[in-house]
Every structure is written in C-alpha cells, then in structure tokens.
Image 1 (cartoon, rainbow, N blue to C red):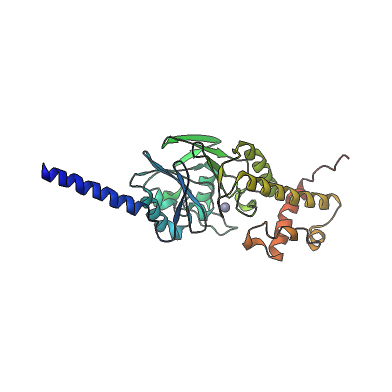
Image 2 (cartoon, rainbow, N blue to C red):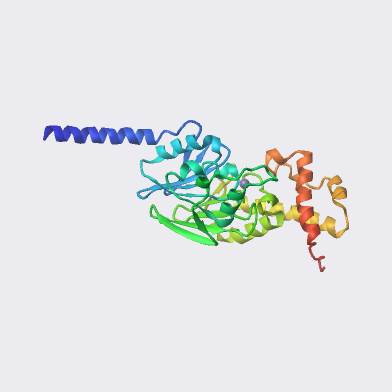
Length: 303
Ligand SMILES: [Zn+2]
C-alpha cells in the first residue's frame, strides 16, 4: 500500500514536472495565450496558432522547413496530447515548410489549390515541387468545420487574394481568427500573381471576410503582431485607396511609367511590409495594381 502511495506521489511529482516543462517554450518560439484553447507560437517568420485541449493539438501552419524541428519541439511542449490536425492557410513555403515533418504525426488539411501548387512547384518563384509526404492529405473546397477541444474550428476558403488557396481559420469559442497572409500586421498584404493571387482579389476577399469577423476577435496575421478587426479594416482601406489612385491614372490615360514617376504610393511606405518599402518596391506595388486595372479598367465615376 505504501509502495502504491509512493508511486502515486511520484506520479504526481512527474505530472508537476511535466507541467513545468510544458510552460517552458522551446528556444526561439514563444507561446502566447490568446484565449480559450488557442495560443500563438511566435519567434520566427510566421505566426503559428495552436488549439490545445483534451482532444489534442490542432495547428495552423508549419512555418519554414529550417525551423520545422524547432517548431515541433515547441508544439510538443504545449501538451503531451497528440497532434490531431494541421491546417495550411496557403501554399507558400514559409507556411508549409514543416508539412513533411508534421504529417508524420497528423493529417495536413488545405484547400485543393494548395495541394496542386505545392505538387507543381513554381518556376517563376523558383519553388521546387514539394515531396509527396508534404502534400496536404485532407482537401476541402469552400468550407470545413472541425469540432475538437470543445471548440468549433471553421475553415473558410476565400476568393483568389494573396493566393488562390487562402484559408481563414475561425476559432469560434476562443474568438480568434487566423488570417494567413491575407493580412500582415501592421502592414497590408499583397496578391501573389504567381500563386493565383491579385491585388483587386485581395480587396474583394477582405471585403468578403471582414463582416464575418467578430468586432472583438483577436486576429492572427500571417506575419506581425496580434491585431484587431479594426487593423484589418484599416489595411483594407489602404488597399482601396491605392487602387483608387491607379484607377484614376488609368482612366486619365497615363502609362505605367508616368504614374510611377508621380510616386503616388510613397505616402504608404510604412503601410507596406518593410522588405517591400524601397522606391523600387513601391514601383512594383503600382505596377501590380496597374497591370490588373489596365486589363479591366474601372468604370468612370457618374457624378
Ligand atoms: Zn504568403
């Protein structure tokens, strides 16, 4: 009996030790609780959301290949429970780089365009085809719901925006929304035309999804700090203002070079990602809008 009690005591001690270890983040990744079962793992180039509860762990995105092992260590320290599902918000390698490793533990879920683009690779962006074991094994089309950890996890595919396979993930009970790269805080995101995205599409997708986001939701951007619905609305407004400037230039018959020479996007230098804020990069933003708008000009204002 005494031996049994000692074993019980040792068991309790081990549980405490495990709990102490669980609170300790892996080097480089920091777990920040957001609400309910959901935390975000931060420290590298993208934000990884994790729902942790009695049913196990659900992960949103797997960051880059180089940090996959480190991310796995961080995830395993969140809970001894098994990884149940991994969700990819889109096909870019800084969000799917750990898929091959994580899919050894749990299925990866994504929109079908993510699997298609990962399998094909991309010559323009020099992305190699992903190995078969990295390809998402559970594919959805427009919407999907998971019920785990007493949470309703809703996956919603957006019209072509950042890419043509963007998924926004709603954790209903925790009131957390993972935007993938449709939103980057504090800057606006961009439409990657080599991955089926576009600037006008990004605006349309944000207009589509914004009304579905609760006013007090915590927003997990693909990159950057945890944000609010207001931040997303502000980003949308900047994109619409950018588009309006180029719309007007195209209507006035300006060439791309003439419009770029006017430096119309300089005032939004701090609204675009820092790596994309040089003069040359801002020219690229004008060009991306111009190319789409010149193909399909907006109708002239009626008043
Ligand atoms: Zn991306």
